[in-house]
Image (cartoon, rainbow, N blue to C red; front, top):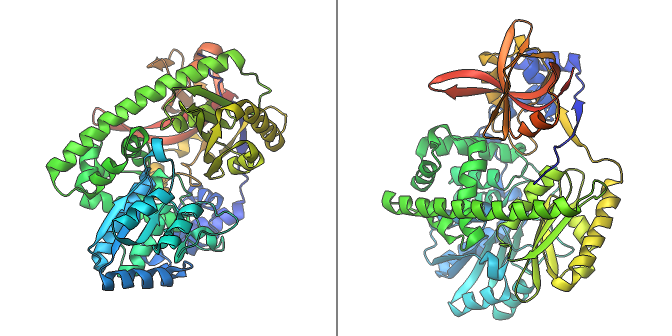
Length: 564
């Protein structure tokens, strides 16, 4: 099993020394921090302060969202009439978080006849469908509110209108040519891109609606959970939600999340966006991927420690099962690629019976990262229906590509970087050819090399614990606010310091003049076996604190290296 080592084109950011000096002096921070802020789009000292020190005052009024007044009026009527209301969410972390936020917000507003639901990933697929509308109508529901879905539910909206069931849609996904028929449609993509909440996720939109109803924010911790897990840009309002939400999560330690953190061997007291992304998020997602996401929702709503601990254990077990399935599918995919993949290929499309439809999206993401090409994985059902999940990567628009192939698809939808599809088995080979042609059109026929955007050139002597503490002001880091990437040149490899950990990770000690640092390159061990590590090198890295046996030191996390 051989996955190609990624190749990078280093893009070292230009430095406007005058602007950097002016901003650094205005905010009282070192030029390195000012340089990074400017690269993140900060233009003025006021913008820098908002970026570094988010507060409740930075939230925009919820009624800026189109249709918010109408949505609040209809919900108020439902409260006054004591109507039965269904909140219909999604099975991923964002949808589960959005459902929990809106349940809490509606209860605070005085609604008492509430129910909630979400589709089963493996049998229903994504979003609200007519059958769910009919079932809700039979149960006496007169108002359905979607969260993190609904913007493409035209058939369900039509059926709701036929049955006299009102529909409020809260969603954040891309809008098709027309909006579904609904009383109100809350979606930040309806707004101008300058709207500060333009990139809100489903949980963020639910948070806005709850604020509009009750006048004050609630469930900031869950809003942060959904925002991080959905990998939306951590800019503007999203950054405020996550920054304040992480503080809320650490201070109040919601019982369900605390028990899940115990299962992951982490603590909420020092929670970070990274720990949500790699520890809590996958465990919450596991139930929906393998069976029913309601288990994760029950964890967020749990009030007793015994109930929360039991659910957390079940989610952890489900996640272990998910990882085993994912690993097996990934190995099968790479084995197939070993036999057929060529460098001139612009894309990857693999299909097989028996692959778990709830897990193939993660595998597609890994393949996209490993091969630096858009990847689509398709699981074929017994009835000949293929359920696919695709990941696009930099410079590639997945929705645009699927639109070009739509004659071969039953349905598709998603984001620029990630999308789902259903396709008849008989069309898969034609889809492979059509998707490859579209990838060639978008990416060109040159060698595919990933850009490595470097923020700062720094000497080892500039890196110490004081700088790292200042870098923590840039947290939370994530999509469109990545951890700062440094470059140091002419770095010497300390002789006999190279070590390989767990057959995957590469460790070494590096020296520049009189300063030494330990360095680790995650998943870089392959380079040790296939190329000569230079004795003098330039390195791209992120400096981090590392605590081992109660001793905290500075280490360099390597992203790439090359001869000096």
